[in-house]
Amino acid sequence: MTQAQYDQCLENWTDRESTAEAMIPLIGRLYREHNVVTSIYGRGLVNRSVISILKSHRFARQIDDTELSVHDTFPLIKALLDLNLGPASIDLARLVDKFRREGGDDLDAFLRTELADVIGHKGERRQGRDVVLYGFGRIGRLLARIMVEKIGVGDGLRLRAIVVRKGAVNDLAKRASLLRRDSVHGSFQGTIKVDEENNTLTANGMIIQVIYASNPSEVDYTQYGIEDAIVVDNTGVWRDAEGLSQHLKCPGASQVVLTAPGKGDLKNIVHGINHATISPDDKIISAASCTTNAIVPVLKAINDKYGIVNGHVETVHSYTNDQNLIDNFHKGNRRGRSAALNMVITETGAAKAVAKALPELGGKLSGNAIRVPTPNVSMAILNLNLEKATDRDEVNEYLRYMALHSDLHKQIDFTNSQEVVSSDFVGSRHAGVVDAEATICNDNRLILYVWYDNEFGYSCQVVRILEDLANVNPPAFPV
Image (tube, rainbow, N blue to C red; front, side, top):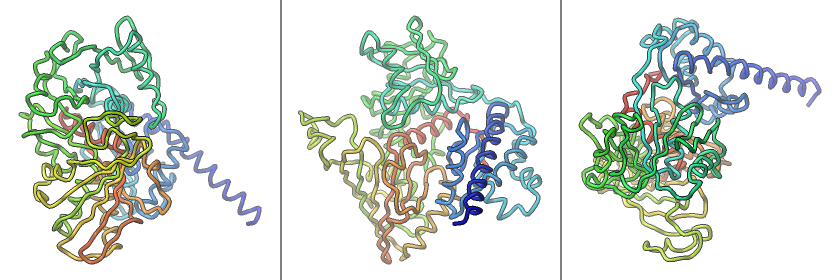
């Protein structure tokens, strides 16, 4: 390497840094003045650092084999600001890709055609919706983080309260600390203030009432100015319509979402698959499980193209809070043994639950699970017998296309790196990530490996359901 090559490489990097830095205030203006959320293949750009923006562009090569340049997205962002856009969700990478394929040379004309439905609607507001988190454990706190992050100008999901049992004299400070610091997901991106007198937490300007109650019958949300709220039950104590209907008796509550598989006739919703079946008459729905959310989109994609005769789903799942840290009594088989020291075989209902979201796969899948000594990120191994023969390259290319261009692009992600491990998927906002390098295919026999952040990725799926229920979803582009 010559000195000139060294200098040129460094100069190119500095130029990219400078361009990314110039993008930050424009991304912020789009968000705060227009309520436009920008992303790169689902990876949000709002409130991100220079390095984070560059890494998002670099990641694009995992999807379309080419690193996305900030010199492609920067002029796009500048052009978006001139269009007086109304609320929208815009994936810059997918928009650049579509412009290259269909747009010709005139970026302004392309954008005016593609974004016609929201051009000139700057200042329009959506009616926000109150949300209450009943329970504030792992999923509850991540839901809070996501809703605070997405609050924008306040016309989306408004996290108004959390309901918990009081655990200590300094309970409020401890709740704030757990929201502020997370051993897996890192620090909260913003500020949190504690008001002991009023029992509130203020996270990035969002005031969250903390309500202490032992059961739903003790709560009147209207006392706190909360009306027509969606109650998200994160406790798992009740999983059927009868138990969850207790929430509907609380003044100020009108709908309930369960963050666990529902029992009985409850609709189990996997966003991207069957969320369109939600009707205004549905007062209680389930967001299914993290594993069901991870595997159903991929199973649908495969079944639609190749047909699934039958198969087996093996889940390699991080340990959860219901396991013991050290050996102790547990009502479940094997779960009493130390989660930090053992791989633990256990049952999973995810394979059977697939049929609630994809009835065409009813009775075709078996399933089991192994809990392993990692705190987060799991893997589903889909061992499938297909109706149509195929090969590894064709399947991988098809799933890459689904991650990039299909209606399931928010659910299915794709990686073809030979070096990724579980911790690389902490914070993934997709329901599941197909590991193309691990794909095995022999005629009608297909084995797929699907990573998923069983905490954060699942929480993103829950928020998508909440946005649909609240009717606060902005239009997404490109279509």
